[in-house]
Image 1 (spheres, rainbow, N blue to C red):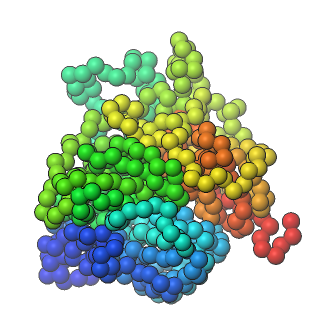
Image 2 (cartoon, protein in one colour):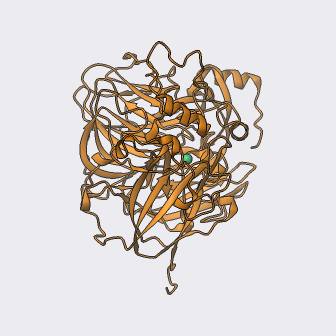
Image 3 (cartoon, rainbow, N blue to C red):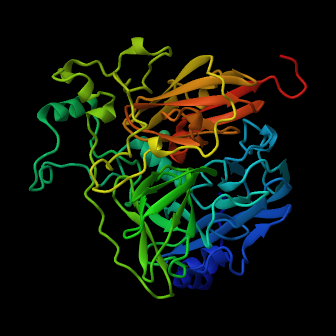
Length: 565
Ligand SMILES: [Cu+2]
């Protein structure tokens, strides 16, 4: 990354002003009236210019190097209209390559923005113009697909308004961009992860705190199993609050981004998890969240108290607040920290922020062993790395093959089984419109999510992208069922470019569409895919450091336009 020089005075000024130092767009300013109000900082129309450059980003009195679009973190809100054809010109003023990927947008593959897969990237000090028709509407986002630029600020929200009336009625909207910021250089952070998988995990059990005055939730057999696996039952996240500040619209909890409303309004929150490496559990104590869309696509409204949002997922929720303040709490999956913001009828009001809840631990189910399925079985004898279960070579990069992966589509996510209120599960998602493709998939393709946690090695079917494995090949128009099997003990938010897939969740013709799906540890998820977008597409884990380590493959759909089969 190009070093950025600035005067000591500028640095101090930036530090003093915190998140305001960069001239945040209106929707991301500390007090926001919502998207309908005086929308400076929103880019709209059909001809949009984005300048990628280094800036400084200040938070909580410190300032660090960022890579930004038009000088802001998050990047500007891009607001487009379905049916238009948009041109987005990216001017790269960095001393290195960049790229922008339009996450969840159905674009021709050359416009998808993944260097080495769909285009060559945008060279230092050059421009590239993306141009594509907008075939959809809803809440999306955009981000760099080059190196680790996403960690240092290159991400922003993207909304496409429907060509006709919006099926989701609301009186006011707020964008909620969740992210994680670190003052460590991301390449340094990655190197440390490679050197010692648990280096940032300050929550490790020790003999001193193991019982903590409470009954140990693990049985002796479970502990022995973990010991044999060389796993740590608190390894929920690779990078914790020890290294991260968690942000809402670029604001730390202390900076307290505040979204205003009038009592009784239906307020639409367009929530994007733009974090590099953090899965969040989001709730607003005192408010029901009516989930009305995910990954840009409307679903049958479902009321919940909390939801887990993986990296790159989006959820639209409606809340109807009373005349009081509320805290929006996005607790990290490992409960080492939280992003916090306020929703209030007037500036200056705050609600109590609940403390971090007790940290979760992993269980046998997260190791691909379903207790319920085999009562009384001696798990100590179970082969945790049975090579005969998979069709790929099992090398050092694969430390586990789930012996009995379970269908976890009805699970709320790690640590959310017993929180005492309703948490969204994927089974709760029901499409509004019947699926377009009624065909039954003609084949099933199993894809294993693999890794070696101790060595921070991550792969799909045991192969890293850098090893140049064969792409997953689909015939254009083919209807196929993908089974993603998680042979690791971490949740992986998996994203397929260029397509939506359907979650096979028991709702038949009303299976919901998504572009990103959390696959829980030791579990599997089935996806029905119509491979209707010709070209080469990235398919990867959206935890940035997992992708960077190699948990990414290419999906190729042929024939291309004009080719014969
Ligand atoms: Cu991952």
